[in-house]
Structures are given as structure tokens and as C-alpha cells.
Length: 249
Length: 257
Image (cartoon, rainbow over the protein chains, first blue to last red):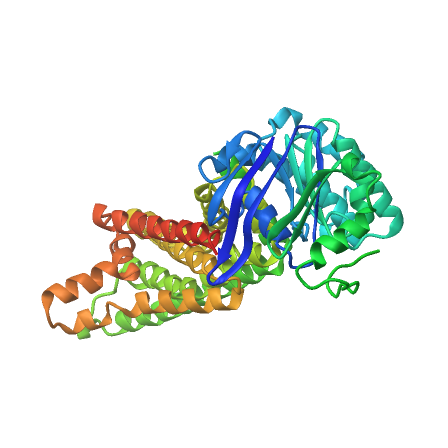
């Protein structure tokens, strides 16, 4: 489903992502884990065809992100770090618009919008303007926007950031349910999220993958937290148990 | 095409829930009404004076020349200032809000995005001009103007406004800042508006001809006088195409930054 080989992203002199390689099969929920500034968003943006990699290749849903970005775009749902909402539209209008540009046929549009709103728990705010939504609702409308056209691959950049504990639980449940029929990549810096939701973890630090493993293989080994801290602090120096950037909760 | 229409409809919705459309429509309505009244007022004085002094040999000027043409030329100036305000947010705002990220990662081409923006803005611009065209359209009921220049004039002003809109959208696609977009497109449009002025003073005929060619108001003058020329039509189509092309280039390059 997703095949990433040695992709790098450079912004001028600055190298945000270096030689990242990983893969995901259909039905995988991949947790993309790393401290803030590790290159998660840069990698995700390349997979979402927002910005092409400087070097390397990546195929998403069987199509190359550089050669056939339009084919990729038909098959992905993408939630950027900030939900891309139009404040002046109501939730329903917004989802209808997204459905249209994602290519949902007109006759299915209304029923799709309705079922997606149910699924993401936003039906009760259907008539509200996006500008008046709370952070939790904005995030859920953002997820609704990413799954409305039932894409093969769903890419979520920090889907639970800014939510309260109850909302986090709901969103995680929703993401888990997506894994049945889709491939999901979600980036996060929250460790327990990965062990609760994902079946595969890719740890990234300073723009490079430091570990890629199915979660099942980690059972019996050290806890994810220990692995995370040891992998990302190996280049800082042994014994650094203080992570200034990572939000370990 | 479906994508273009979806984006255009969304653009119109945004325009009409924000105060921008109402302010621009209101300003254009008030200014055009005021200028029309003023022009008609002076025309009246002129006609009365000409009638009182038949010995002076001055002919009564035609209502076409004195009222309709003047009115359309005045509208052009108003449009130079109002269109940048209408177009400043089109793409700059999408980029600032992050909704551009949604558009660009959807199965929609950059050209479709820009065409949608142009179509949405264009609908409002045409509605705005038709609203202002109501005043001269009353003239045939009370006077006897030639109709052909009246209609070709309306068409010309619409072409002019659409050309300006394309330039405004291009300016909006090069920045995330709406004020920068408005200021830069207003500057470019004002420059284009006055650029043919040196040509009227003579000088190198080739340069004069060139300056007249690139000036949108010099090009639209034929339409206002009732002379529809293919060359001017071609000019406005080129201006629109250029604006759309520059916007597409800007949006494509943005992905590589």
C-alpha cells in the first residue's frame, strides 16, 4: 500500500528528512512517532503529495507520488496538522464541498455527507459554522473530511492534538475502526497512542528512521517508552532521560 | 469542469458571507450612481447653454459621447481601485488558513483551482457591472442614444473588469498576505491605467503604439465608442490568460518550497 524508499526533503541548506524508508500493508495502522521537529510533518506532506521529495521514491496506493500525484490524490484522505476548515461554511456545506472536489458522484453526495458525519460524531453540529466549533469538533470535522470519499490510504497528522481525554478515546476508537478497510498512517508524539491504536510503529528522529517494527514484535521486549527514549537519545548521549521536545505522557 | 464549478461556488459563498463583497458592491453602487448623476447634470447644463446661444454655433453634443462614454470611462477608474480589494483574498487567504493544503492534495489540478477562483470572482464582477449598467440602460426611454455603443460599452467594461480580476488573482497567488496582494495588484493596475498617457504626447510612434497596446483602458476605448475590434478582444483574452498562467505558476512553485 505504502512503499517509501530513501526519501529526503531539503529546504535549501536545511535537511528536514534524510533517507527515510518504511512500508505499510493494507489494513496497517502505522504510528509515526517522533519528537517535535523530527520530520514527521515533512514526511507526511510528501506522502500526501503536498510537497514532492527532494530525492528517493514513494508509492502510495500503488502510484508514485512524484510521477502520478493525481492518481495518489484520488486514493488518499489527508488531515494536515491544522484542520483545513473554511470558517465561513457550515460543517455540512464544508463536507459537501470536500466531497465534490474528491470526486464523489452528486447523487451519493448527501448520503455520504450524512453517514460520514455520523461516523465522526459531528452530526450534531452539521448546521454550525466551522469558525464557531471547539477544537475537538474541528479536529473531528478534519477527520471526516479525510475519510468522506472512502480512500484507500488515510494520512493523519497528529489527529488527537488538542483534544480532551474523552475526545481522544473517541477519536482513537474511530481510527482503529478505519484500520479494517484502509491503510492508516498517523503521526504523533504521544507514546501510549501508538500502543493503543497502531499495529506498527515507525520511530523517526532528526529526519531519519531509527526503528520500524510491528507492534506485536515489541511485546515481551522493553516497553515502547523505553525503546523510544533509547532510540531517540542515542545520538544525544547515553542517560539523557530528559526529553525537552517530546511530550511523553 | 465539475471541480471548477465547485470551487467557484465555494468562492462566491465565501465572498457573500464576508463583508468584502457587500462593501465592494456597495461602494461600486454608490460611486457609479453618483458619477452617473454628475455626468447627467453637466450634460443638462451644457445642452441648456447650447440651446440659449445658437449664434455661438456650438452643436449639442450627442448623449452617447457626453454621457454614456464618459460614464463607462469613469467606471474603469473605479474598477482599478475596487477589483484588487475583491481579488486580494482569493488565494492568499487559502494559503494562510491552510485550506490550500486540502485543495492541492485533492484530485483537483492547480489550473482548476485558479479557474474556479476566476469564475467565482468573475460572476460577482459581472453582476456588479450589470448593476451599474442599469442607469445608462434607462437612457433609451427618455432620450435617443445609439444603442449599439451602449451595449458594446457594457461588454467592454465587463472584459476590462475580468482582465483586471485575472491580474488581481495572480497577485493574490504570490503572497499569503492579503494587504500585499491588494497593494501590489493596485499598483500594477494603476500603472497599466496611466501607461498610455505618454503616447498621447507623441514621440516615437512605435513606442506610442506599444504603450497603447498594453494599456487596458486604451484597448477598451473602442468598445466604449461602439467599435468592437478583434485586436482588443484578443488583448483581453490574453490578459486573462496571462493572469491565470502566472497564478498557476505561483501555485505550482509553492509546492516546492
